[in-house]
Amino acid sequence: MSTITDSLNKLRKYLPARRDAVMVTVLIVLSLLLWQVDLFSPTMQTFGAKLPARVLAVDNSNVSTLGLAYRGTQHLEVEIIGGKRAGERFKANNELISQMELDKLFEVGDTALVGVLDTAQAGVDSVNAQDHYRVNQTVLLFSLFALLLICFAGYTGFNALLSFVFSCLVIWKLVIPLCLQGVNALLVTFLAVLVLSAVIILLVAGLTKKGFTALIGALLGVFASCLTGWIFTGLFKINGAVMPYSQALLHSGYEYLNLSEIYIGAIFLSSSGAVMDLAMDVASGIEEVSLRRSGLSNYELLRSGLRIGRSVVGTMTTTLLLAYSGGYLTLMMMFAVQGTGPIDFINNPYVASEAVKTLVGSFGLVLVAPFTAAVGAWIFAPKKN
Image 1 (cartoon, rainbow, N blue to C red):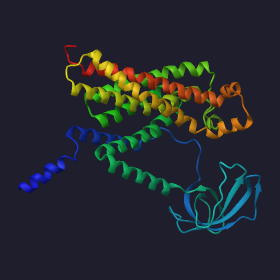
Image 2 (image 1 turned 90 degrees about the vertical axis):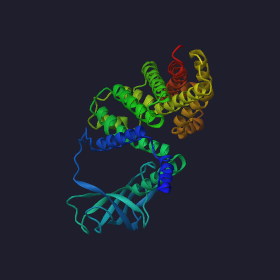
Image 3 (image 1 turned 135 degrees about the horizontal axis):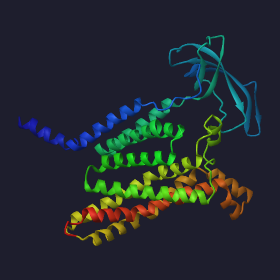
Image 4 (image 1 turned 120 degrees about the horizontal axis):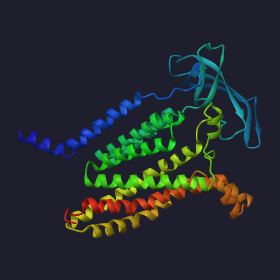
């Protein structure tokens, strides 16, 4: 009996507390409910299905080169390997339009994503080879990431993985459909960040003083980013069309969308992760200081929080700069090749939009440190202070 009791006591060390278990259960239920939500239906009708197919034969006789790009039609023979039409063989066409970012060449043994009409007959009709099939690789990469996260961080890593999945569902099932319906993008993204911040921070820190300190500080920082983004987007005359596929979106029947609002919402949505990270660092530091030296006043805790924030905010702002500029590395290389001067460089709309995105995100990031320090000093200080 004692052996069983000892085993249970050891097992409890690796299990979450009852309060944390309730939060995890609620989050799992919310994720399952979000998975069932369908707030938006595509306007384009489909008359077939997109299925994975194995490439059996390739004919490149109609493919020619145009500089570094290809043009023409690559003829394929494929066999469907998924869905209700598994085992059926079709002729397939791969249209090449001399755009390196969109064109692809298939080889025998590749797995392609093909569009098959409902009326297509195997061996008679041709299908469209749209792109390489990458679902299996995506699942493998995500599984390795989840395994590494859980092995390294244990139960905390599982919580982080759960919050990652929940964040994806909130963006895909709520933010995108509501924005497509014309709801104010600033309001939608701010509420989404509020929900995600509450879930992620409280799931990691629990319903504790540290958790509430980090949450309030993060929300104040996000609000500062929202306000500065709204101001400087107008001052820089950025209309939001610099975002990828924005013009194609308008021409697809969504000309009523306000791209500037979507652009501003994307700014503080993309920077909210770094804001939450810094808020948690400052809150954890203040908690540790208050535990090591009890009875510190508000002012002393505030000074400690500010010192912690100064140590982190420098690297975090550089992190935002590197994250944003990395996506436009080839654009900057092209400017260098053309010998673009500083004035033309700064006034380019793509560069200006990235500058606003980086600086506005950094603005909220710098402010979140004193915000969190002030909130932490008020929460952790003794009642007499």
